[in-house]
Length: 353
Image (cartoon, rainbow, N blue to C red; front, side):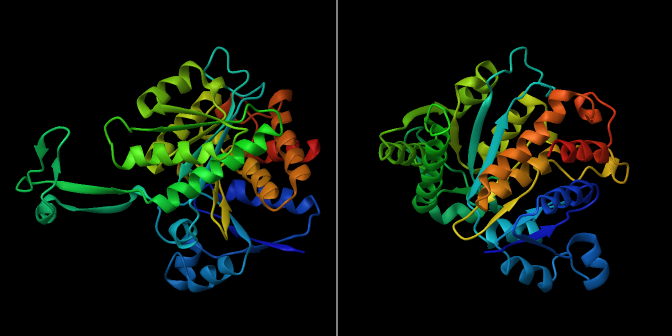
């Protein structure tokens, strides 16, 4: 059955990696139809809004989406994330020879940070401290009461049991899939459960309970401070690491730095009925139109998209074609120490395919 993928080109330099990625995917002659949504600046010029109803309709009628970087979380990005309830943010970190890692010994780095994508602090439940006065908030462990007469702002962090169980289930399923391919089958949960003894401890507890339902898997836990340190000291120890929203956001970016930066970091956001795929780097306005942006992250997103749609063999083939460019070392972009253009890198990937 033909699958339908909605393409969101993104803004500024983002289309320069989205377009060639889609062209490569189309050239693989799979039963996938790509449709193009009008969003961002081109939609503002035509419709007066960056996210017109026609774009939402196109997304709703598609199986998934591939998305270029946008300038803000509102509009199409916010709809894909919260509107389509894509709660699982999958962030792989993998080293292959040729990547410009800052580490002396990066060999063997290959893990996934799985980030809860909808809750925590990021929905932005914020306001003036005085609004909390009726709650009479008290921390019995520390023996302090919130002074609601002080001038300032608050932010509420919310983690629900249902979504926490969902994200931990995804972590286990990813670990099982990786175990079948030779990885150790270990799920590590990381949060600030020693201080946030309600929200973060719940996250830790549910992760432990869920992993316990999979006798083939092993479980580990790290306080988030230590996890940040261990990512640098011994990143090879990790397999699948599950975290809440803000912790996963920060540490996944740290993880990308281990192998060469955000230009290499793919990203999948998956829900129960929809998924979208896109690089985590920004729109790179400083190099817009210069044919310099590194397409690696977006091409690897294309590989993740193929796997999601059931084309596992083709996904592995595309990933191998991308990494072979690094192993050959002839067509590396400037951020990776080379002089190749975006186009030259993509042509090298096509040649490898």
